[in-house]
Image (cartoon, rainbow, N blue to C red; front, side, top):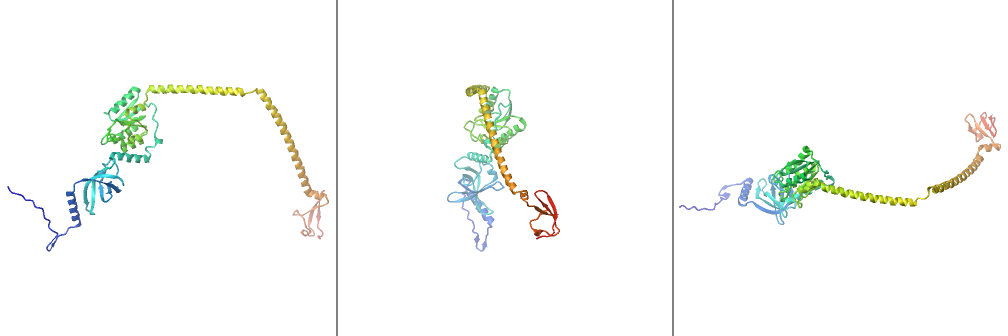
Length: 413
């Protein structure tokens, strides 16, 4: 039997004698890349993300670092689309991938195929990230939530056709109000495509079903099972719904993004049916309570009014006596007013006489009475105050205390 002896291959040096061999940069990078990929298997790497960026191509480019070193990393769009969360700067992660060389620049890179956040699961992180985003956009605002209709005639249900949740809701509605119209939109409630089916069913009920309220939900399960109700597409479908939506997902301790966006949250699907259609007996009990409160309030108000009336009766005296007193006061006011008026009139007359006397003393007519006259030069009719204003031949009109005279100037001095 022939023996095969394996010997380690000996590579020839680049320089042998007078013959020189050369490598291009591309060849060198390809050799390094091939060596790395052949000798270093895919592995998990722990580090912190920095310099994260996502260009329009959808690929993730970032640096993975620890306290002593760093390495460039890339996660292509196809792998990134499978992540439940969005990577960000400062996030501690575990990355699974392979180390290779980007031959165009000779850069050493970690090509990431999968990524998980450290400290909490990817689903939990995705939940918190989407919750924070939608809250900032106002999808959870309490002021936009609507009141559920009282005893709706038509009810839309979005859930699995095979689950116990649908059976429980139909039983509750049938027992309480069997005449109600129910529109069922059967959908997948977990797995691939479930979120889009749920969102589409909510939109269809708005467009075609003419329902008064929508219940969207499913029975309990793990976080992964309930994840369809944590998808953004479902949250936005609930937000866009013109019909009030009740979220009824899982058990009482389970919370989903749909619960925060919906107009009302029910802890279970059964509780959602009870919330939408309360029992007649409960309503009758409420009516009886309201009736008793109303009767008690009316009795109390009547007692108050009776006490007030009795108090007024006691305070009310003989109206004729009060009238006579008021008439006497009116007479007194009238006499006092007349006296005040006469006194005021006398004061005004005295003031008028005083001022008339003062004006009379200043009147030019009073001056004329003492033998003076006033000369008006014609035809201007202005009063002559100086002989310098006159010339021989000027015509004057002279006013006396009694009458006037027309004169001609013979000479001025």
